[in-house]
Image (tube, rainbow, N blue to C red):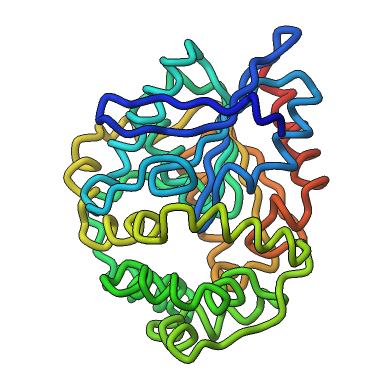
Length: 327
């Protein structure tokens, strides 16, 4: 990626957003890439290179708390609708009125709320691994964990309790190699036993457990990834979990009218068949997409959670096919 393509926007909230930006050529649309935890714009490198070479415009921000973007310590600054407005400020600053949204992991929550509140900016939306998430005005973590356990047989998001805990950022920073071996393991099947259940992620980190690195990157690439994620520490990234656990999004979600829950523009969902923390939830996500997104396309990838890095050619090809239906 060309270093000259990095820009910054100061939002109405006073936060600086850093992002990779390239203008489109030959009348192509612009793609907005929204990453998850713990990631930065760098996690879209394969997609940025591929679609830049095809003439697409690119906007790939480090989201709030990550990379060179502002990282406030207060979890209340990480409410989804507020971060959506930050993204709108970036688009307006660049004078970009229409984008194709592509999101992964927590980025799917931001893209979902962007569709709920500013769908006029989006001509199509692609969700990777995590699907479209309708507003959750009564969200409660303990109730959600219990519901998923009843439905799927295990505590799919039990790790949220630890990731949003007050001591999590310091523990993660102190044991960053242990964190990376859990989040980016050589064998994604460990997530079902060592990440998903309540208490198991904390046990892993506190005991400084480690596994070999994931096969989809070299040691040098992994170290570069750590350096990018750790630029401002991990309190900001953990605040995405903390904000949700504290139910700070509930009031905002109550403000969204019911008719905005349903999405009529074209959408895409890419599932990960080897993502063991949510594999059983895959059909639930697909059902949710079918229920709320009336014009959706779905494709499964033979991959773990990190589809963009693990199977970049397959992801790029599927996204390109989806994009071609939009214009």
